[in-house]
Length: 286
Ligand SMILES: [Zn+2]
Ligand SMILES: [Zn+2]
Picture 1 (cartoon, rainbow, N blue to C red):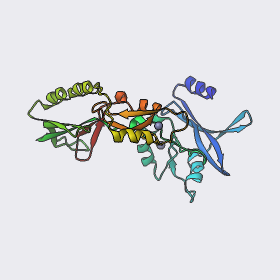
Picture 2: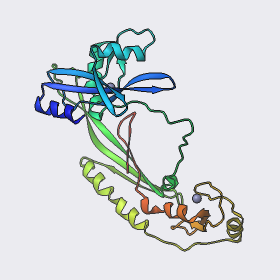
Picture 3: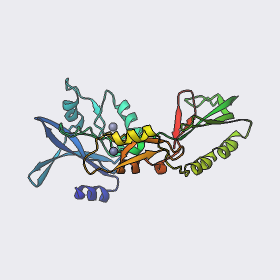
Picture 4: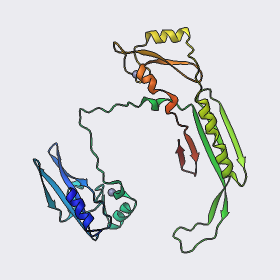
């Protein structure tokens, strides 16, 4: 394979080579991408199929890539125009070109690979289940200011959205409290940036460390617990049971494995910011 890369390198934009391979699974053969060329828009392009026999590989020239891939992507075997990266078929060359322009080849090729039947996927990232103690919601309002239209543009922009105000709402899930800040005025983007520094105050509050408060009921719950409330697995012999508590309120939250409890820490915490930027879009930052 390095020979192919060297060949592309020596020919400086003249030649690009994609390599595909034959995969056989449950008696079904499919041709999948093995290596995508790093040379964009070369003068000459060729596709090869890598066939393995023991330790030896043979490379076979593909005369008509679209016809070859059509045989595996549509039952009618009608020739379509296929993307060299994701192998998706398109009815016309124009639609395929648009697809490629949007950057499919930049991601280095992809195909769907299903896991084996016996394989089990298991969620392990328990820190992600921790509810965000603080969330910031923000929304802008704009004035629509008329704009000079450029008749030569395909899209004619006739209005400019000028920000004229915003509201920030900081919500805490710990005590249900919220803090709002509303601003109206010309320089609202600068004021918005200043106000978003509220994140520093929040991060300081994140350092609070209250001692655990255990009621009698909490203690009974802890003594009788058979399952970790974080991962849901049952406690085995030798497992260390620990009391998980909220570091802001001191409230007991449940009985957990020692490891799970360490994962369930706010040190992984980032403040989610939901910023409403248009009628249909919400930008999520964190
Ligand atoms: Zn593609
Ligand atoms: Zn656990």
